[in-house]
Length: 400
Image (cartoon, rainbow, N blue to C red; front, side, top):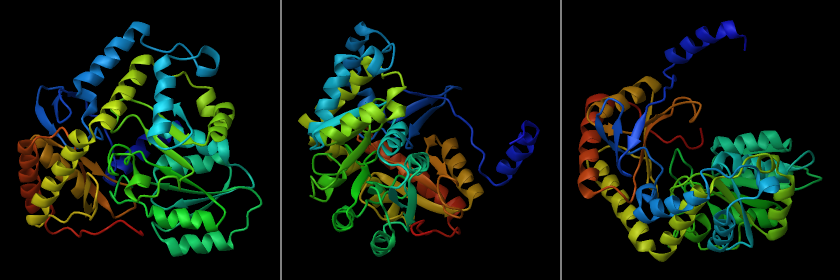
């Protein structure tokens, strides 16, 4: 794009209701924040699902690790990194039932790094149409052929696997929990198709690790098919309350990525405090799953129940992601703005994050919310829906 064309292009973005701004927010707890003007607000757009960012033990672990410095000083293959980072990888691998793990700087970078490192010309990647942008971009930079199947359409995927010639490797890639709809991938079917179609299965558990499964181990545990997934990707920045991403797989695969994945090789390692925080959060989740997961599920059921009883149409789901599909971008923005005036922060999600015509309000519930906060949020949402969105078409984005 020419520089002189940028102002007009920005105006076109504004006209479509897709303009985005950064809003400063200082989190005072995992469920409450304060805006720069001093306004306090309830927070229902955070992915801090277990409230680990403000867990005293997690903060203390990060504080103690600061004795080793605020940063790592370089890439791991040239400068090494803190002991906490290697310990974290070992425990993530065990937690996910895999042989080894590798930590990247972000979840986004993890998907780019894994797909870049494993797939290339001659390979084929079969990708769900509603996969996260990081998976989509990872497919692009890999230079592999990409075959996109309609969201969770197993018949279409089976046809693609049958009809697509491939001289190299075949990979099925999918979100575990789809971040904009809140639904869970049909992992048993995907695993069977991977087996019969001679493909490897990659699941991005960014919104599943610490969220679903009996003990929070993610999508494979949710479906009781542990061991059927070849590569499990996740983030440290959501349920584990820190920053970064990771992949767990067989040891030779992790060793290959360590040597061939440019996003890993040429990035400075995350600092010791970040690694220590994620490690402590993981250990807390393993030691007390009911304390964190139990609260998360009770809070989710409370808010979903209150909204459903009041006639607010939520997309169905079994996760703490509660979407209300509005359709029109400007109405979704107006809905979020009205809630903000009442002290409730939530996300108005618009294209390109979701397909055209499916703009939505995306609510996320955490284990840190109190019953009073859940009820207050429900009251604001119900009144706002009745005032602004009651006549809007509401439906699922799936398959669009």
